[in-house]
Image 1: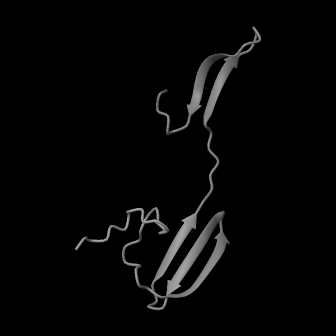
Image 2 (image 1 turned 90 degrees about the vertical axis):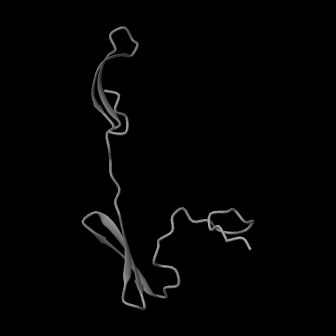
Image 3 (image 1 turned 120 degrees about the vertical axis):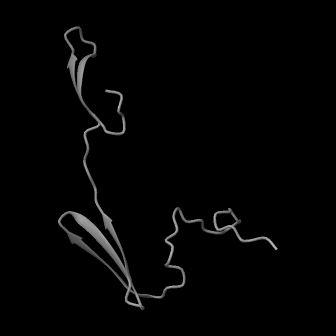
Length: 90
C-alpha cells in the first residue's frame, strides 16, 4: 500500500503552501482579528485553550535611491545611494 503524499496534486484536492504541525485535528472554538500599532492580528483559539496567532505587517521600502544627470536629456546614473537589501550588488 502506498503512503499518501500530502503534497501530491490529486485532481480537485487543495494543497496548502505550508502546513502547521500540531494543528491537525484541533477543534476551533473562536476566531477574531484586531489592529494594534499598525499590525493586524489574527487569533484562532482552539477548544483545548491553545491559540494560533498571525501578526501581519505591511512595510514601505525604498527599492533604490540614486543621483542621476539629465543635462543631455537622457538618464545617466551618477551614483546609487540606497539599494533594496534583496539586491546586494552595490
